[in-house]
Length: 163
Length: 445
Image: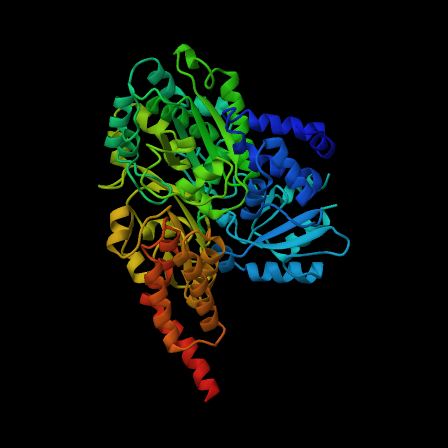
């Protein structure tokens, strides 16, 4: 592991990465690449080219391999995002139960469109594909949490509860 | 801190559990069904104990699964016992079992409930799979957004490890099995089994050519058996057989011919009680709809997508004449898929629904095969054009032409999945597309 890598990621993150690496055969370190990108992103907020290169160094793959993975999967952020990522599902089941109102209310309240971040850097709003919580439609995810059966009142309470 | 404040607003863990048969979903009256203690109280790990105690060998387990008539619950419906028999079990090579928990087909939300409410059923099912296949390692690939199910699975694996139900020399039998949960990072295509394997290897989730099939050349090029979460989680109960041990007939008898056992149906959309209903295969659709409280707002039923967004849509009269099993749905023009039942009432704008579905496949195409990469974009743009009032009658022919040129011409089934909704929506609701085109033309005149 390079010194630079230790510089960028905390000891806790590096320990977590070791835990992920331990899940796979020792000659298959690339299997932990996705987890390592996730851990790096969780710590830094987004994946800068430098950070992706650090991850590649930790795993021991060419930078292009890590970049390929970082650009393929939708949960990696290649640009800075707000403290809270609000991801609203607009797929069929949510659409049938009124996700348009949810989206409209969020856009109006936050004053931003999809793929934008509020000026204070607090919220980023995203439209996402089915998050597999269709029985609780309309729904959204913020960070690691799912919020279901949304209405305007509930959305207001949720947003007020976030710091 | 912020989570503390919002705790009551975060989705309830039991929120979508509406009816259980006690196979993959826990009984509704249990307080913390996800604990090892609760799982054991309901007969959990007894099948593993009996099997490891020598009561049934791998070939015997495969036979029970064949008799039980359980078909893969992820959508394709391939018989589980037959799939397990494909593995070169005697080979000394490293082998793997992999669970596909990359749930993401629009309308499907059952595996999430299995993992967060009944995670030990999956641990036990995968361990039994490992024993049958002679695999010492298993991976459970969970979609990236599923933090809650992932935590529940991690906790269950930890409990199982601490009590000797996972790891070296399980229950003193000499059998070793280690189970790891692997979190994805957002890509519907990884629900395709070979894309999942590539993703598990830390690469882009692009499907592989088949053959070779995973049973021969799977994870890291080694023999691998992949099944859906619900399939694995059903195995312990099938072996327990409700007291008739290692029989298979009990589970088979719950269902109908060609569709053994019980199945979770995720009923969503325009119903009064959306949720997961684990019911017998062959349950009449009418009965399932009734269980889900009927169509909301006292409206009439217009259409149903019975198996997730990729299966053909059914008009009300066709679905009302159907039972929820593979044969009946097929005979009535659709498919059981993953059991994701999307209900649409009389006010539904079918062009709008198809636009959304087409957008999904356009977004999620991995881009590897030209017909899918380019074709899904064509489908989406043409449907959007029609929906926004810029369509022509020629567009309808072009839509079908594009759909037909995608179908069967791609490495994986995502291309087909994009084509089928277009074909079926136009077959049954062509008049709605024509009406949108006509109204615009008359406006212009």
